Structures are given as C-alpha cells and as structure tokens.
Image (spheres, rainbow, N blue to C red):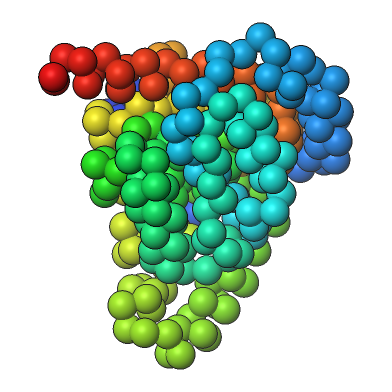
Length: 278
C-alpha cells in the first residue's frame, strides 16, 4: 500500500499525492478507440485553424510521452505552425531513458528556441512529457512562458500495471547502460520513474510548480493508461476536461481548441506584462 501526503502548493488544497508507484485499475481497452480521436480531429474545423485564435510566432515545444518519440506528435506540430506559432520538436529522443538525460536534451531545445525567437517558450507535454515540461518550468522559469500537460500524471504515479511493468524494464536498462555514460548523466539512484527519483524531475508531483509560469492541465475521465485523478490539479482555473482516450490526446480536437485558447491568453498576459514593465 502506498503512503499518501496532503499537498497544497501548486495542486489545490486538500488533494492527495500518491507517494509511490501504484497500479491503477483503469480500462486499458479504451485506448483501442484512439483512432476515433484522430478521425474527430480531421473532421473538425479546429484542425484547419478555423474558429481558434491565431498565434504570433511564439515558440512552442511539443514533448512526447513515455516510450514515445517526437514522430507521433508531428500532427500537433504542423497544426501549431498552421495557426501561427513556431513549433519545435523536443529532440529528447526516445522517452525511455534516465529523466536526468532527457531533461538535459529538453533544456537544450528550450534554450535554442528562446535564442531564436527572443522570447520565452511554451511547452506542451503529452503524458510523461508533461511531467518533464513542468519540471523544466520549475527550474528555468526565465525560459518558459507556459506549460500545457495532456493526461500527465502530475500528482503521482498511478498507472495501468502494463505501464508499471514497462517502466521497470526501462529502469533496469538505464542502470545497465549507466557505467558507459559521463558521470553527470548517470542516474542518481535506483528509483528512476518513481516518486523517489533523485534526478529532481518528480518535484512537480510534490506540488512545487512555479507561479511565474502559466499552466493548462488537460485530462480525460476515460483515460485508459493513467488514473485521471492524478492528471489534474483540482483548480478549475487550470484544469480542462475533454472526452477521449489517453493516447488520443495528441490528436483530440477538444485538446487543440483548449491549447489555442491557452496559448493566446498566455501571450496576451506576456504582452501586458511587458507594457507594465516599460
């Protein structure tokens, strides 16, 4: 049985943080319906940029989920460009390595986008990619304007047993490879992909999100991978519920519409702040 602690900072008062890896009895069969999300997107006017606020060229980095690569987010990347943003792939490689290593890659991409556009960057992370994005924002709020997490386990690791099994295999592989890596990129403990990971990326599971960065938290109650209660903050100002599958959040028209609004509002906040500062 996992231990639980009350978290107030960044997640809304009274919400329970799950302290350890814990299997969730979620109906993974729902993920077989992922194709319906993609079909809904293609049939939606949102996909063509109709009826959504347009971007102003700001940089947006999309970050893949556990076991994924940038490839499956190409659709989202192209859509962001279509509505007026400057999209970047995360360049983290295969999201099945030590978080310490993956975060270094994501930081390098964020620094590149910041330098090329001359302004703070927006991060959009799917599933575990959202956890990485929130971590980067906590440690580098000077580079990040906003974070949008899509079905991300931001309150604890409660996922389908299959995902727990895969994370265990990845953890074993990470430690088998670690002696060949530079010391600074080796895992710092045996707890990769748990709430006790020493790399620091789990800080957002402990409620330590920065108020200097705008956030959007998208979740679905029909999530077949992550316990949906772990994917929201409990604050209606940040949380947006959509219908659909966990995997399909990358191709969900409701998600795209919410993202367009979020990015537009965050950019307006940035502009207003610059006017006040000048």
